[in-house]
Length: 207
Image 1 (cartoon, rainbow, N blue to C red):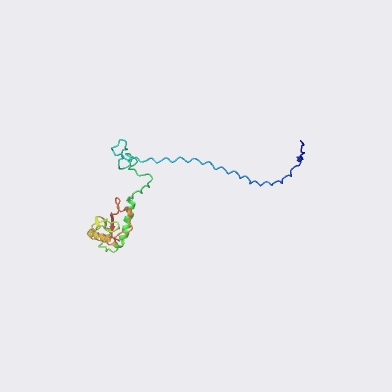
Image 2: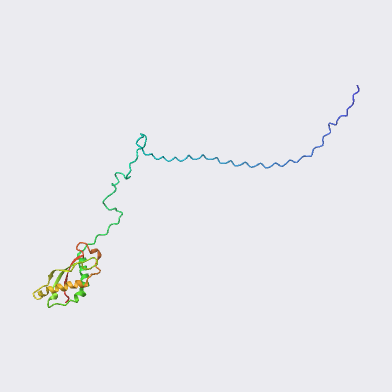
């Protein structure tokens, strides 16, 4: 047999290098997402309100006994009370007192007010101006007369003027009646002990 001679394929022949395909740009890797903070466990639910105790019906042994109605004050609520005034309260002003000087001032104020009426009285005779009449006044709070002035005594009476005593009494009463009501007397000394609601003073005719 004759051998056919094959033309050897040039093995050394290299294939034409392929055109390099440009690599596609890869998208930038996304930044890793921040991890969400771990959710804190929910707080424990508030302790439920204690259910109100049911009033006992009296039939069930487990029923709570009903509270008796009435005052919620304890038996010792009176312990804090006292007859003594609270120290936080302002102390009351001392009560007014009719002293000798106050009485003299009131007597002078009354005499000044009745003097115009006394000056209008006519002297009944010699020595009548020496007679001093002690006269009692019952006065209302506004200074008006609560009763007719009353003569309760005399001084300065002698043989010469004795016959004029009754007339001087009438003139004294007329002077107080004519010039009433009296004004400007201290309100706080009206109804105290020896106050001017019941006041006694002396009177004499001018001259």
